[in-house]
Length: 206
Image 1 (cartoon, rainbow, N blue to C red):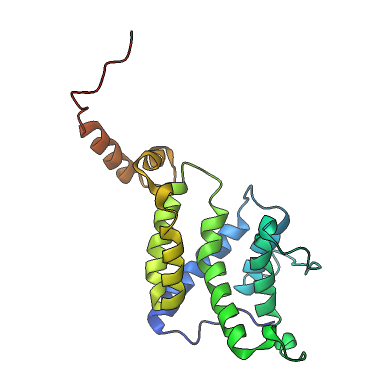
Image 2: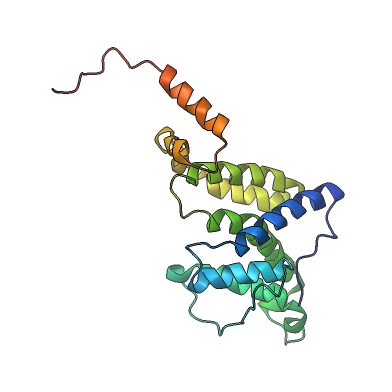
């Protein structure tokens, strides 16, 4: 099968991609609450595509099902399968999926989905950790410009349409997150305590 290949990228990008890959493989070995149905298959395919330890997980290629907005994870699952099996698909009769330009674009999407998006998605089940993971995704997307500027810019544009998740009210959740470093949580708390209430704020009723 055609798995992830970092050879076309620069040495700087290879080092960065190795870090992304290691984190995703370690995360996929952990016990996550979202590990069921399409999400479980997505995690298994990510491990297979990134050439993880095949002894840790046996992947079964399931028969394709429906493809619609209510089952959007299917797009990721099928895209990874297309990349893994592209040598066999290329032997089929011509069509949109066997177009060389289309295959390159699908592989760029799968590289992004497995190396960056999968880590963010697999850790989204905790509300208190969400602000931290959202900021980490933005930082990683900025770094990913070294690998694929077009993919990184497109993902950043899409993410900026959902910045309501990073409001001042949501950032307070980081105080209760175990993934945020202690000195950062303490700094956030100190900053909040230093803000004096407005004089015009009404006193609560007794």
